[in-house]
Length: 194
Image 1 (tube, one colour):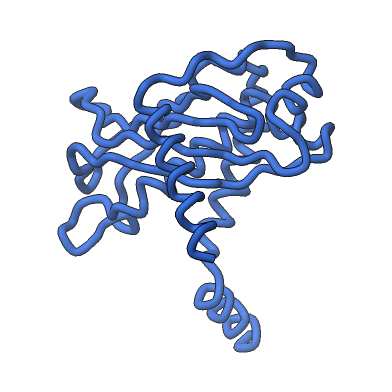
Image 2 (cartoon, rainbow, N blue to C red):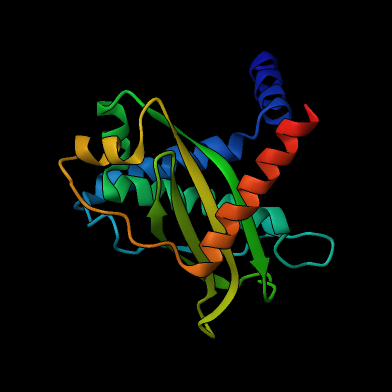
């Protein structure tokens, strides 16, 4: 018995067990709900609650938790849009290539919130996703994030074609154009310094 407790304690110390448990729980819940595939450009909504494990020393949601919540919202977005299937069929993978977030108002303990996620645009290398974190009670956008999800081993168009879709990317809104520019400038600067 002590051996099992030791193994469990080591797992909690060495790994973020809660993250993996939540990932599996979210996946199983989604599959049990049997949600139908939604159109790629349609918004995806996830509900959340600011809990004790989300709080920082100021007793509001820790800045890093916003991005973590966006990870789970993105997982659901990719499940609802069937992007995971398209990636698997095209033998590709997807990784976070960059993100930016603007904090507008703190989420406090026991605040309910929604994350509204949508694919804004894609180019030859990446999907660009917007996450709006909205406090449920006031409908105020507490934070907004832009995330670049880089497709490795294929292009977003190949992934979409593997899903049986032939759609064009919507034009990038101005704030996303600036985010893309920022990433390009940063890449050029880092290449020069290497």
